[in-house]
Image (cartoon, rainbow, N blue to C red):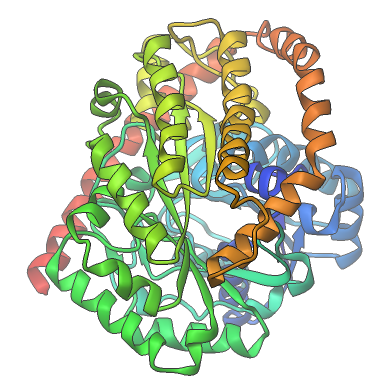
Length: 532
């Protein structure tokens, strides 16, 4: 029997559009491994890597003749193309089950089921998917499979909400990395031709930012793989010829002594082995770096060459409302420490929270530019987006603040919620913030004489590549600026179509059920803590 694993979104995301970097979804490798263990053949179809539109991707999948079409719907922007491709596969009649999992699928399951999907896997998918594949061979009775939603008797939506939750991540299947076409995943702007892959060392997040779905999806306890397991995965991707590794953990380190010690052991093992040739990418909290300055050199020695800091805002009140609990001075210090250590620093900023004034947004843009003097290498400006599953989304539902349920617009690049300024103004402000930041950085580089100067450090080599990449794309950026008024008008027309009340009611029910599941997750976490 065959399983097609599908990432349906052809359009480049923010990283691909801005920095030319493309990375494979780790979930495909996990699920391919699960399928193999259950005696299934599996193949991965990535619309972006294949440069295939919906019709072409459906043709490629049909030619593979799978029994199960499994869609990876982590990002909301994957929802609409997944629905269209699923319908094409069903019309062709050669797929027995069309299923989906991921962040978006978990928190919008009833909408997907009403649009042709047969089964949705809720939250963590490896155990659930394994049980599902086993049941397909045994008798196709889904009643006893935990953590799924499905269509029963062709009409009724049935939910088995009890969670499948792996506390010891070493119990997860070893990812089948061979499922990727390595040549399709490139470091683009920084290191053209070098291949990049995604790994994880942990799941969960002890923080609870109100715009983030990580805690709702994975729980509040930080669960991690053992050092030995992480090393084995690194050794395997080294054999496969990857140079860059992005650890997709939402926080590579958290301020708990046991976990810090574990991370230091991992970094030390990497530094003292052939794995030190890897260029590692991690996500860190700025306040952790600022309060643990000694760790920066350890990060560099362990192979970390690029960090993402979710700084989000330069306005203290906005940070407080976001539950981010950062201090701008800590962010500035973290940028400086990492940059001086030879680590590339990329920061994320968010504009347009519903409680944020235009003055606060301008303060964030100014703060981002000021960080250039501290060593900030690049920045991304996202529009505040209440993604399904988040507290922000639940609040927007209750307050009837959502402007649209067109999931194509839930890409953090378009406004989807009422804010203190008009959605078109917010859209333009966000776009211009990008151009303004990099223009400012370029001017400062020219004044200092550092723009395209001879590289002095390894970091400088990659940044020079990046500068050349941006210079080559200046005509494209200029064309984008010229198109902005027309793009804004098109957005205005899209936002005129209001959400269906029935869909809003369904999503509210899902959020309420999600809260019950979170209580169950917390019980499992407490039992695991007591056991350890």
